[in-house]
Amino acid sequence: MSKLNKIAKKSTWVDMTAFVDVAFLILSFFMLATKFKPPEVIKIENPKSVSSENQPDKDVFKVSFDAQGRVFVSFSSDPEGKEKAQGLAQQLSKQKGLNLSNAQIANFVRFSVGGIGVPVTQLPSFLNFSEGEYKQFPQPGIPVQDSTNNQLNDYLNALLTSTGGRKPTNVMLNGDNGTKYPYFKNVLAAFKKNGIFSFKLITSLEGVPSGTPLYKQQNERK
Figure 1 (cartoon, one colour):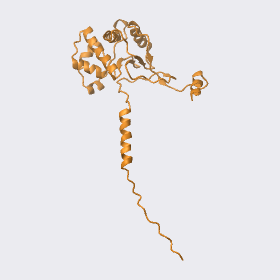
Figure 2 (figure 1 turned 120 degrees about the horizontal axis):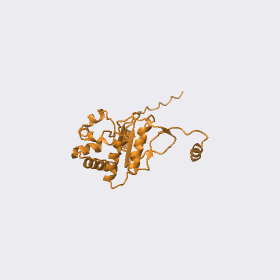
Figure 3 (figure 1 turned 45 degrees about the horizontal axis):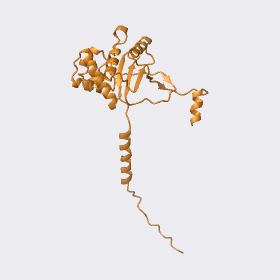
Figure 4 (figure 1 turned 180 degrees about the horizontal axis):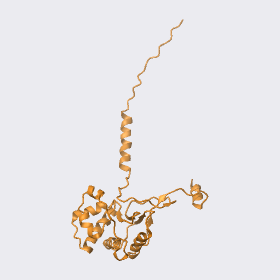
């Protein structure tokens, strides 16, 4: 009777060094390539729409207003946005006699990414805040309730004066679905007074109703 040959045992150990290196390279790539949404100090529930156009992230000037009618202005964090935020602060300081220091103007540029919503006269004290104080401070909003004291006009005028009338590439209107009409009307009045007639409205995406022309158009692309 023949003897069965024994199968030699082989080690199951696998060198994972190369796999770990690849994993870290992929992780590093996503960490560097991913764009995080800047934190905003205002919470807004946008009206819904079926538009699929993504929000731009360069040379953006945004006017936001929440359900209570508090109005904020903000800029994108790219070089074009920072340049326009700095120009606005410098011009507003000059026009209103605020005498903002370089440090205060630097804070305006930094805070403008998350949103600035204070009356013009409060800007000097507001721009002395630290980053932590800025995040905790309940900003009252830029006054627009009274048509005779619509201070959004001051912000817009300072912006356009600083650029020689050149508007940002992307002017955005970011309104809450529950905002009362007078606030919305006064924001648009400030836009009109400063010659801003073209802007994009930020909405919350919802599904396209089946059977509509847009629904058929999207299905044809697939």
